[in-house]
Amino acid sequence: MVTDPWTKSLLCVKAAIEKKAFDLVLLEMKGITSFTDIFLICSGKSDRQVQAIAQAVEEALGREGIRLIGQEGKVEGKWVLMDYGDVVVHIFLEPIRGFYDLEGLWIDAPRIDPEKGERLGESSPRTKERSG
Image (cartoon, rainbow, N blue to C red; front, top):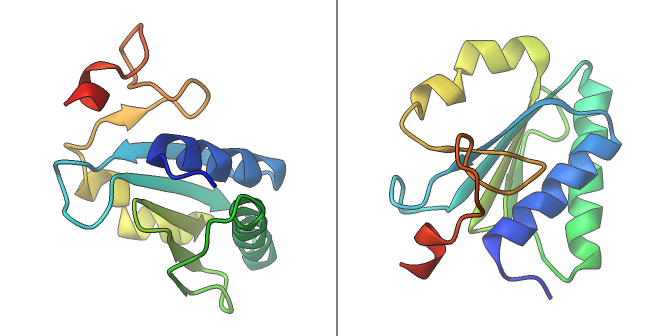
């Protein structure tokens, strides 16, 4: 079972991309909030796509033995919040995302490259913050 939040978040990214999620952003929340380590924020173009992305994330993590702690908004498909403890996934319908602007709200949170799993602007993997 995957317990590392970095690996867990990258599983979420992969599942979301497979359902054509776009504008994926990973925010490192550790040290900024007390309730999670990583936010994944992404968008879908329709409520059905938002629901499909959420289902794909849940299934992908479920295959790894990771259970969802809580979920809100899946039925409506406008903003789905999925709580995995150290990883929280926000899946937005495109216009709703701009209204709530979570990236702006958490502007101080470092961005993580979803493909490499390292902070944007760094040339090497996150070894400094993992060792602390």
